[in-house]
Image 1 (cartoon, rainbow, N blue to C red):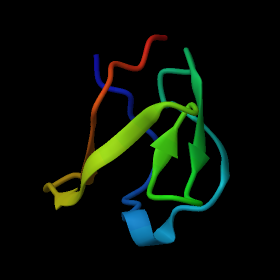
Image 2: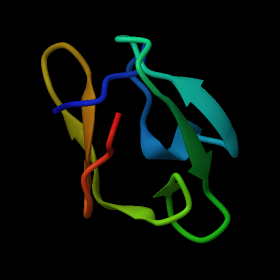
Image 3: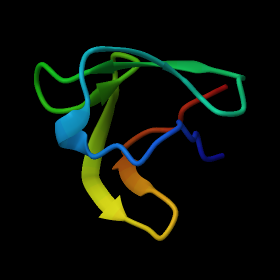
Image 4: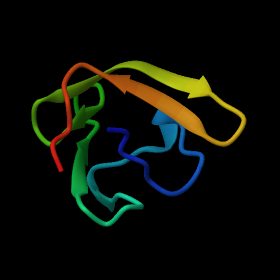
Length: 65
């Protein structure tokens, strides 16, 4: 399952905080103090893959809704 947030947000524009997903099933927490970490234990391993309709950040674990 893909978790999509609004906007074309590159990793350099991220900041610590929470972001709702577009399907409204989950709010994700983002921490950028040491790399980009989602929900305390999910690491962004490939960032800023630009697509035609947004940017993709690959992660190392599944986000459960």
